[in-house]
Length: 197
Image 1 (tube, rainbow, N blue to C red):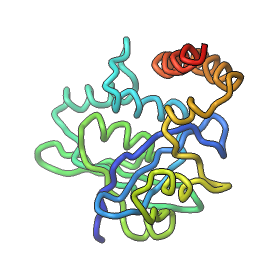
Image 2 (image 1 turned 90 degrees about the vertical axis):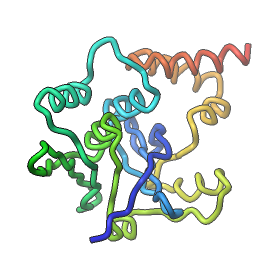
Image 3 (image 1 turned 120 degrees about the vertical axis):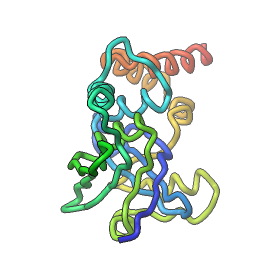
């Protein structure tokens, strides 16, 4: 089965499921997008690594990497391998220098681990055909509209969401970010609020 390489295009709060986030993956040499709804903690684990933020204490996915390095195995790739009843499944392909092993995982955990090892993320044609959304142009707003539907989350950048939010919405977002200890996010919200005053 041919593998299709994916890139992380964005991570934004889900408009369809409260407390969840949309991780949007894009086909490397195509215009299809694969949105996956993930939990808040997994979204935070992915965002921290993308932004190269070093937490005070190692997170679970950082511990996985330290464990792997200690026992001399590495991760080769992440595969979004299956879609059953609307739920995505993934595999982490590992190598210990002698043999390859495959570990089942949730896509959010697999990707959080994969980006820590800087390995490629793949899927296959059947998953992209079933769950992918085609973006027909280069215009970002047009691509956002393609991803947004009653069952799909918004893929607007966080900055755009802040610009379009009311003062009351910003205050609510700030309280939520502080409550979840998302301090970088809270700082961005605070900066937007300061611009308006």
